Image (spheres, rainbow, N blue to C red):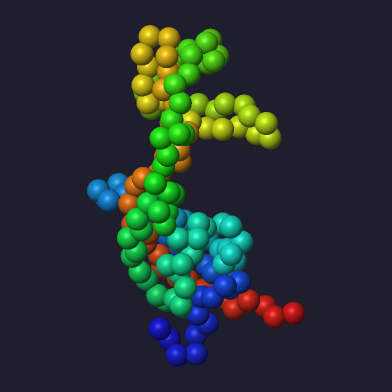
Length: 150
């Protein structure tokens, strides 16, 4: 840490490069090849588990963190896996494992991933695709601006 440098605390504006990887090294998302992202700590841009990793870092710091599912996208729930009748799908959609489908619900849509098709029954997982996965979160902090006091 640089003496006198602003450290990341609640409300700070943070500019960073990041990468999210699976345990096996598969890259899920990264902006290291693009402009860095900026956000304010606590604004909901990052999950709380990711934000906790950033606390007390300052510009110039680079770190890698291993996050268990509970600190990332959750463990997932068997209650979020449903078996639906094939007729619930549009005639234009051919359900097959891996297909991401959006179901209209009050106030928006609910995405799910088809995990199995057996006859006229289709199993859809509505958990976040990264639920239940341990993730590696790599960050390079580019700038930190302390929370403005009004």
